[in-house]
Length: 290
Image (cartoon, rainbow, N blue to C red; front, side):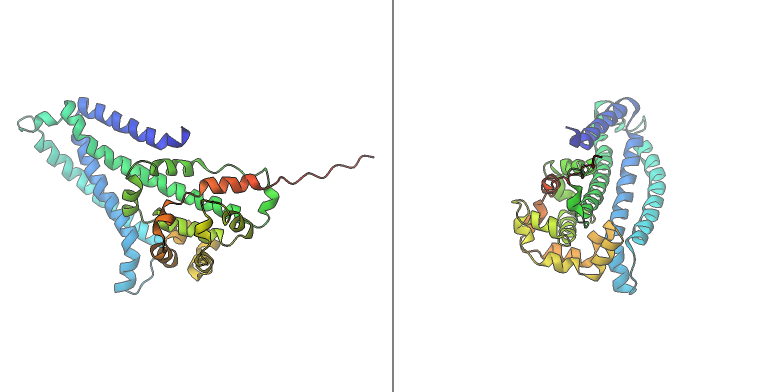
């Protein structure tokens, strides 16, 4: 059940927010939730579209760090401004003389609190997905390193953030929804990036080419070609997981793969664990006795 920690935390947050709004009023939660929602939308949109717009209209190549930083500054400023505006507007809307005052607290207020709660949960799940994707790519990369066969019996367990991300995505309809809003953890793109990493390793690639979960996908030669792309090579060498997933070659390979549903539904973690368990521990040399 530990892999469902983010889901349980989200449920607890929704319940606490419901109780708070029922007793203290929903105005501040509504103002904060709506402001956060707009701010996060601006950040995600900027991260996704700014590089393309800059290249198309200004012929400038923007790094993901600059795009995310600029988007975060704009989104944060918009949040601060809108927070004051919405707080004032909702106070007027739900004041004691308003016909909507009955919705400001009690059960009605608790129900209204579901909207800002879902905005906060959406942001939380997006962060969980991003962390899980970074850690999964780090874990895959560690298994592709030369000499990994000598680590038999010593390979550490995968980071829990991967399990948390997979648990979040197991919720009905949630993964496709987050794919539409989260350009970094889009399932097809991140799996294409992981397969490009795997293609660089003889041992891991050979093992996964025989595994039922990954055999069909690894039959394609495009992952080796993808790993040889200059931008992909640079991102791998620099251990820049965001640059790797958002590289044009990776995005293109993910979009053009003939069986997109297979790539989208791929869950690498079980096969990666089996690879680690398949490595035979290297026997320690016996000490000579005199």
